[in-house]
Every structure is written in structure tokens, then in C-alpha cells.
Image (cartoon, rainbow, N blue to C red; front, side, top):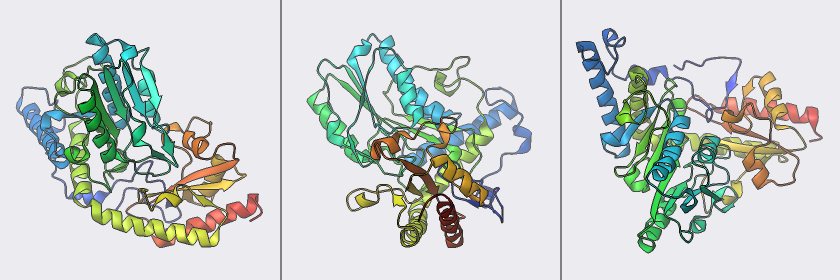
Length: 399
């Protein structure tokens, strides 16, 4: 049973936000109601009990990703975690006396705005470089250490949230290890926003080779409003919010223990069965794309040609349609009972075209939408979506 339920609507926007999986959450331990009113920093019995539940959730997250408990920092969501990781690191090195001009930050040219804008607002004078890319995949070899650089920070998302390309995280980590040997006096750190990854990919931080990792609850079929930052021991950051000493002094504010508790268990659940979820969802994706290609050959699928070498996440299909506006496509499909998205949902008030669409399809008049599948998606839903898309294109184009 899912919190989102409608016989007349088809929800295909799981990459933006997942409904609550009530059946999954029924298997989670229940926090006694008498503790929920307490503050986990309080010294009375209820507060101590809630603090123990918070500690258990932190341990569960740490065990799930192969980390130490003190390396897990809870936040309000992935966006705040990105800000804490990147702004916190950049400002820490500035406080430590590193000239900002000797700090280089590499990101993908299609990074989530939570990363790109955090870097832009970190410390004035930092050198920001975009990694080279081809068809939505970063070029690992474009990570270098410029002359006179003291600190290099690399931030690349695990899964590109609009077109679904899976970035070569382990290859980037190998590249960074190589550069650390060549430049022992330069500090090199690797951060990844893995928000789109936990349902389908391994998040063990040692196997990935990362120093910091961002996660949020919005893609885990649980309540929203919570996220986390993994920060490897030895990585120094300074807080970006102030007003309390919670979360090892890095994230002030009373922790929402009930949200953290469900987030921790949802993450553990996702990682325990990600291989099965991958297989199930890939089957839906392949069915959608093969049916779409046969029915509407004028509709393009982004990054499809790269799968012999690289990979796309199984729950995202990014479509491009000539000579039609992206938002018009979304609204017309919505009027026909199908919920999809254009661009990233985090930019829904920005009318500009998607950065990655501009990058991959320069000087082309295209509409672009993202179809994303989830636990409740069926082949019947997919057929209805394609039929609705066909109706829209018949209305606005000469297919």
C-alpha cells in the first residue's frame, strides 16, 4: 500500500519524489509515543530514550554504507548536505589560511544546482572548473592538479538526475588516488551526491572510494524532510548554520528523530534489495523504451547509444521531442492524467531550459521530459503514458 493512490492518475515522476511505502514502513521498529514529544538533548528519561533511538539510527546508517557512526551527520535533506559538504570544506580551508586562489573545485557541467550554487557561494576567489563530458558522462582524465594548487575538491553526482547517466565514481576515485601519489603536498577530496542511487546501486563508501557523500529521503519511499552527509574521518569542515551544538557541532537544531529513524531503516531496506529492484525496474524501462520506439519513432531517448560502454540508471528515461515546449508537454500529459517532469524538480520555478539539454542538444528546438518509474509502476501504466504522449504529439506536431 502506498500513500499516493489514484485510479485516474499515473505517477511517473519517482526521480523527483517517491510516495510513502506504508507496507515497508510497517516493518520498521515503532518509536514509543511517549518519547516523541522529547528533545534528544534533554537529560530526563524521555530525552535519554530518544537519544538512544537517534544513536541507533546513526549506527544503522553507518553500517549500511560501511562507515563509522561519527562519520554520519543528519541534515534536513540532500540540498543542505551538499551545502554543508562543499561550503563547509571550502570555508574550513580558508579559515586554515589557504589562499582561495589555490583551491580548485571540479564539478560536472550538469551537476545538480545544490552543488553548483553551493560552490558559487562558498568563498570568493576559488577556482571552479567544469570537467569535460561526452553524452552526459564525465571524462575522468580531465581531473588534473593545476600548478600552485593546495586543495582540489571533486564533486560529481553518482546518477545524473535528469537523464539518468551513471557517472564513473570508482574510476574517479582511482584517478584521485593516483593524483594523491603524484602530488603528496596537495589535498584532494572527492564528494558525490548519491541521492538518486540508493535504490539501485551499492553505497559502500570504502568500495566507492569517496570522502563525502550526500543522501536524502525524497527517493526512499519514506517521509521527507531529512538527509545525511557522510564525512570521512580526517576531512575537516566548518558549519554553515549556527545556533547549537548538535551533530558534532556541524548541524545545529533539534534533530527530528522520528524522520531520521524512518530514513535510516528505509535506506537499509533499499540497500538490502537493490539488485532485485534494479532488475525489476530495468525490465520496465526496457519495455517502455522499446514500445515507445515502435510507436513514436520521432521521440528521442537521451544517452541510449552509450549503454554498450556506460550505463543509465534503470528508473529514468529522458525523452526529447522536436519543435515543442517542454513545459507544454508536461502540462498536456498532466491534463491526460500522467505526471512526469521537465528539467529537475528542484528548478521548477526557473523557466530557462535545462542545462544538460542545452549541453547535449545545442542549437536545437526540442522539448524534453523525464519519465521515471517506481515500485508501483506497471506495464499498463506505461501503455497509457505512451498513448497520452501520442495524443499530445498528434495535437501539436505532424507525426
